Amino acid sequence: MTLYTRPPRPYVSLHHAFCFSLFVLCNRLSLDKVSVLESTGPIIRVIVETSGQMVEVELLPMVEIPGCWPRKARWPRFFKRWPSKDRARCMKTFGFDLVARSNYHWQLSFLRVERLLLDGVDEDGGCRMKCLRVVRQLKEDVWCPGTRPVITSQHLQQALRGRHFIVRHTVPAVEPMRPEQQSLEQHGEQRGGASPSLKQALPLATCKMILLWECERNPSSKAWLDFGSCFLRLVSRLLKCSQQRFLRHYFVRRANLLKYADANQLDKLADNLSRFLQCPNLNLSPYCDNASVC
Image 1: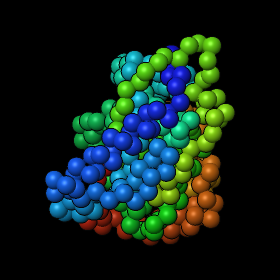
Image 2 (image 1 turned 45 degrees about the vertical axis):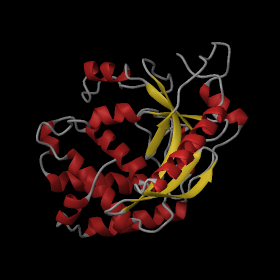
Image 3 (image 1 turned 90 degrees about the horizontal axis):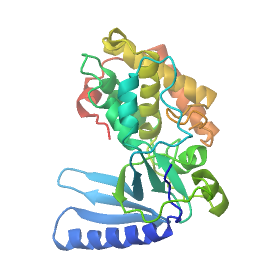
Image 4 (image 1 turned 180 degrees about the vertical axis):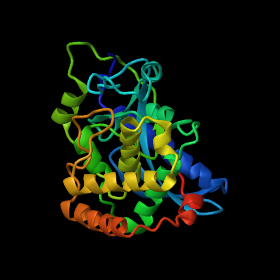
């Protein structure tokens, strides 16, 4: 498997120079106004003021590794009907990504494969993506509101050494790693941890992961025809994960995405979910209309 021997530092410098020059250009040309909120390590958080709204964006450098699949990601699993073996084999040819989470630390990302898995997933008339949109929006607005999320990118980097976030600028790779050199995980552990970002949204990390697991557990089209029961099934799974403080990453099963999450915050989330399930309100048309999936 081809990885990269260089630490992210040179790519981080290139990424910063490119982004900040782009911000200046946007502001000078009276395009969408861009304001930098934070620049920590490779992470640049900005607010983009569009004509309709203000959007918070996190920018990270990323390297694409096409045609390879990491050994840590043992997928697809045996005796599972979703996705089909042929489809999974085709998706793995797209490879994975390395995301810089510090000047010395690469992380795994499976963004392209996740998108392929969910692309056209409801062509059978199901409501999988609708459930995901509503759960994410309720999570942000009702169950876990506030400026500091239950799970931040710091939690995810510690749990997995590999996840994706909102937006990335892609930079080219330079040198292939020789077989005798360190593995990706060893390189990150020995050379230092990653920089935290305190305002990364929880739903992108967990709700999509829960949906992928539920799609694998319920591969039949009939299991996704009734929105009410499917929505409550996802909420119940989110409640169970928050109570147990345990959620496996879909591709890297050894990684618990909730391992480093704040226990008190997870307890509060579990309480809110439990109260909702005791008397669920399924009049969710505002959330169905306004929610979106990254």
